[in-house]
Length: 301
Image (cartoon, rainbow, N blue to C red; front, top):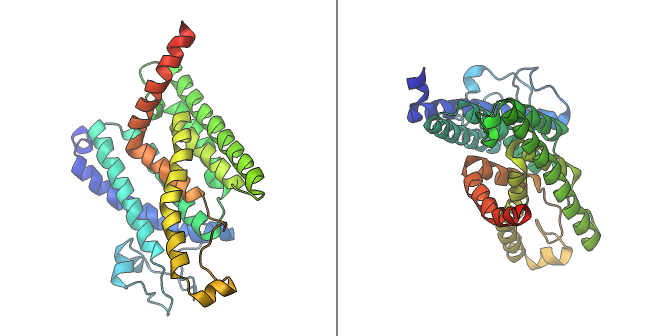
């Protein structure tokens, strides 16, 4: 069993196939949860004609490619989002399984996969509906607290007995409280400055979930990393949209994107959190240590 888990390439392959299956389930969640429908029953069906989809036509990645994005039962065109969600989830799981095998840390791998599942679900749902379901934000925060207490290795704490579990739980709780409160006040100040709502309540609760999994350093990184990623994505899109708009459209005020329009911030927070989990945490924790150590030494003196 140890030799099996120690093979990075084999683990990456397993992670890829598992991730593709989870990605297919994320697509189900993204379609049904906003409509308050069960994600278990009924079985997968066509959104247009509601014909049940046989398993042979519901194979992650391959079915969409084989059917060229078209439903077999009717004229429904399956959005490419279904394929891309399955692919990116598969790649994310493959990376986590690969690195987990290299570090021989199965707990970190599985908790990371669960975290990625939550965040990709949030990305898809928030982009399509501008909402973040509480089952992912509040439920994810509670889950992060429980897992942090059960598995101190999530926060690099081991071999300290009960103290490790308590310290890990405290780190998770600090991430939840500090992250969500910091983002809340940033949103409150921005709302007062711009005289309109700047951040939704769902974003604040989502950052609480991220902090519960990543700790307070991860929560702080996610706030500023998410803002930077948002700028990198949105500013070129806004400029291209403005340049691409015809004169008549501008006169009518008909633009696909414009300054001041509402844009979901949850996906950018989620992307930053994923980056922190899969590798940026080492750089972030080292940076915080360099900046905080002189201050802590001064306090100690």
